[in-house]
Length: 378
Image (tube, rainbow, N blue to C red):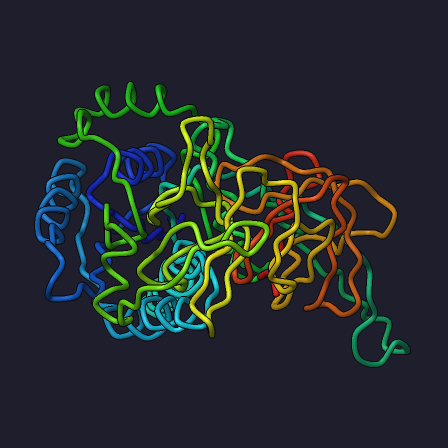
């Protein structure tokens, strides 16, 4: 009997290592793959160290080990896009792009072309497959030769461990991709994954979790962007238009931030100031101590609805007049909302309470623990 072949993205971390071990235990033929991506010269790179850890895992599990060089795709589709969006005053999510273009874009395509039946990663999410049947007559019905077709419907659920759930980053996935994707640790809590890593005697069992931007690691985003976007000092204005401080570039800030700019006119009674608006052309930040009030900048205000572009609906299109939950940032609050889809790729999300959201952010829609999809805030 032929065993299904799974290419597992081995990052050098514990989650992907346990994923590979679990798949072997389940009878799959596993191939470990380290994904090599782009790193700028000015950034300290630990890629070789991560690759070495991935190789150690593969050796421990006695599986083949490959390296996929996807540097060009990462530079063009993730890094360049992120820089371009920030220059335009938007707030893109590089991890969403990384999953779309790298892990389930270039990696998936190359793996399938090399004979893989599936790819797997250490994401904390659940890919549930429900099988539906329907009878259809193909060709000449008079020939009496109808064939029964199988239809698969894949649902993306939150990971069981709510503190590690990564479904927010996966809203761009489509049915054809989910048909080829496995998330072996999605039904486990992190503490269980750690225990399994020790049980399997994996060399990364005690390794700390990686932090920061997908593949780039713990990077100070503003410092990263300053290598590509010129620093330009600008004014910080309060709600009545009074200049109360300065910043080093409006493009480096996003709505809701309370760090990275300097307030020069402040009393001991004043609380924290938050960015509630920005004018990129004039290089001005608008701040307030109250996130529920509107900004003088009419283009950046507290909103009770947002428009989404590039929307993707994984398993069903949201229905009007039905209550859903929206998340506008990773591990952010789940906000009660309704969704109106004018076209498959354009939607409007109406919130029960006003929110502060920046253009370029991902707004992800949930029906209970099912991630329906999402879009990019216009």
